[in-house]
Image (cartoon, rainbow, N blue to C red; front, side, top):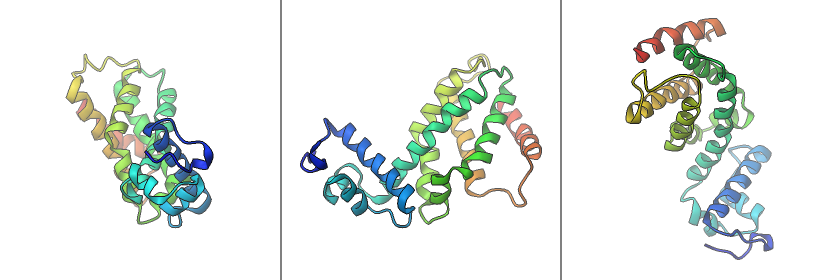
Amino acid sequence: MGRRGWRGQPPGDDTEARKRIVDSALRMLERHGPRRTTVSLVADDLGITRPTVYRHFATTEELLGAAAEVALAGWTARIGELTAGMTDPKELLVEAVAHLAERLPQEPLLAQLLDTDRARSVGQAMVSPEAIARSRVMLEHSRIDWEALGFTGKAFDDLVEYLLRLIQSMVIAPSNPPRSGAQLRAYLARWIAPVLN
């Protein structure tokens, strides 16, 4: 695993090593921005070699994708809190999608990544299997009986992927001119409702 270096505190396993590398990448992105964040910068920050980083992440894009995934992860919990009391599935999905479409572009790190040629990493992280699984768990813990609506197994995963791809497109290529909050919610209600029937 490459336990030399690490500023004298080698990780216990590959999972911890990956976490440290991603945490360092997030720090470097915040300090230096996406254009100047490199594998060398991350390696220097951790006191390891570039090959050690590459043992865990094959490319800079893969590392930045993992960092974007971590940055996006906190949003699932926030959406869960925002929609906790909702009992209407259409209302819940419309509000969740609208909230993310409105707020994600304002997230400083994600805004920086989206403003570079590395936007692809963010786009992929938004619809990764991990993002789908995390979002599905959030929906399963809502007050909606998804099974009664026919969403179980693969059908539920497909619903979540559809919603994440909708958010992804709205974040990466926002409407022009921009919709107001009410216009966005009316637009989403029109196109999400048929999916639930």
